[in-house]
Length: 246
Image (cartoon, rainbow, N blue to C red; front, side, top):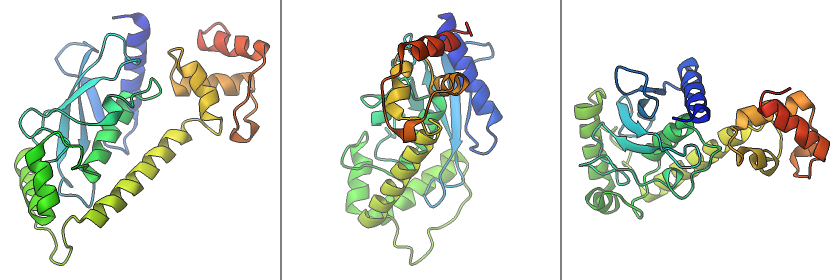
C-alpha cells in the first residue's frame, strides 16, 4: 500500500474513533492491521423500521483510493430497496458515479445511514423489496422491522397505530431533510471557504481538512465564500504546507 494512502486511511480511522457522538465505527476487518479491508458499523436511523439496530458493513479499499470509492457491502441482512436482501450489494450514487476524493470512509457510512431513511424504490438494487414498498408501504415497513429485530438486534416493537407507515409523501420529506442535512455537514468542513477553491487542492489528493488547515495557516481570504484565483505566491505557500515543508 502506498504510504500516502495508508496515512490517509489511518487518519480517517482515528477521526472515526475519536467521534463518540455519531456511533459510527470502522476498523481493520481481521486481527491484523490490514487497512485495505475494514469493517464498519452504524446505528439504524430514528423514525425508520431500522431504528435500534446495528448495521455492519464490509469495506474494501481500492488501490487508488481516494480517487475511487471504497467497495462497501452490508454484512447485516436488511430489507431495503437499495440493498440486495441476498448479497448485501448496495445501489448508491455516492459509492459510484457521485464519489469524490473529498469524501471519506466516515462520510460514505453516513450516506449509507441516510439511505436507510430515504429509500429510492425507483432505482432499486432489490426489485422485490422495491415493489413491496411501492405497492404496500405498510407491509414493507413491517417486514423491514422484522428483519431489523432478527438480524440487526433491534428491540421488538410494532409500528404505532395511526402512523400510516411509510407513504410517498413521508419518504419525499425524509429524503429532502436527509439531503439538506448531508449537504450542510459537507459544507461545514470548508470553514467558510468556497468549495471549488478548496476542491482544486483536494483534486491533487489532499483531504478537505488538510487543505482548509493550510488555508488558515497561510491566511487565505475567505472572500465571503466566493471563488477566486489565488496568487502564485499563495499557491506555493499552501502547497508547501500540505507537503509538510512549512
